[in-house]
Each structure stands twice: as structure tokens, then as C-alpha cells.
Image (cartoon, rainbow over the protein chains, first blue to last red):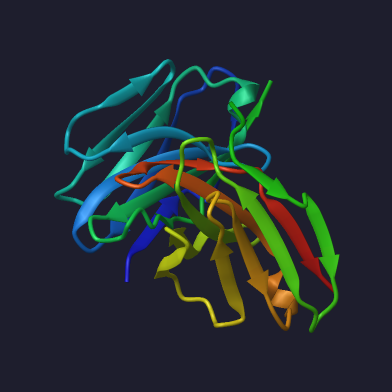
Length: 112
Length: 113
């Protein structure tokens, strides 16, 4: 059975800090790993990673995948209060028709 | 272009009752997946519908059933509600063959008392 474990479960920082969120996984026939941000209700897509060692970047957010060690990290630099949210990591296998297996999420709180 | 919509937003039911939740996919999408997100947990896959058929199912009992209509909208039905069914129910839509691009709706918050 596919499994995703995220750490830490929660994190409290101040504006301007840099944070690193971790995601380790087990999946049959890995296809992709995805990161989502969930503020109120609907998770919104951040990144999809399929290849090892290639960093994806979007503004202050970046993510990288290590397929050998079965983990990914999400970095957020110069955090802002608007970054406060739950960050979800999910994996997809290549026979899963798009079924996502999520971790329990990391709750990030950024104080002014 | 409307994104994924779900109704109702909130719902309160009593143990033993039945509930129906609704989802309209994003325009151009033909596949709908349902997820259950309990408080403090990540979403868990319930099932996926494509071409009006259940294509894949997660580890949920038969009390959870669904339907997809010719216009691709979908319903999730839960019978004999338990307190543990209280959760946020999320619908995600995608295009067949592009299932890595899933768009989530705002969810329905179900409370079972």
C-alpha cells in the first residue's frame, strides 16, 4: 500500500525565516510526487516532480525530489504571513489512474 | 471559466441517516475523484469516476457509493452515517490522460451528530 509521511507536522516561524518541509514516500511504480497548499478548503497545486535532482521553482518556493532515497523537500524562503497554510505532499503510481495518496500535511504558521 | 464546484458547503446529519454530495467538474474535464479529509489529516482517496463508471476505489466500505452523469458531474452518497464520517469531502476533476493535473473543489463539510 502506498504511504506518505510528512515532517514536521507543524511549524511556527517569523516573517523572513526560511523553512524546509519534508516528505518521504513509498509507492508502487512511482510516477510523480505533488505538493499542494491548503489554506481554507481546496488544496491548490504547487509543484509536480517526476525526475530526481531537478529543482522546481516558483518565486520563493522550490522543491526537489530524490527518487533513490524516496523523499522530497519543499523550501520556502523569506516567509510571509500569507504562506501560513497546510502543505500537503502526495504521490501517484503509474497504474493508479490519478489516485493521489496524501501525507498528513505540515501546518505552517508565519507570525509577523 | 468556472472551476470545480461542490454543493452543499456545509451539512449536518444524524447518525444512521443518508447523505448526497454533489460535484461539477471544471469545464473540459471528464474524470471526477472524491476524497475524504478528516480533521488534522491529509485527504484520503474514496473513488474515481470516468465514463459514468467507477474506475478505481480506495479503502472505503460499501456505504460509500457514487455516480457520474453524462455531463460529467458526480454525486457521492454515504448511507448509514457514523460519527466517524464527519469530515471535509473534496472533489477533484481532471482530463483523462492528464490525471496529474487535478483541480480540487472547495469541499463539503459534513458533520454527523
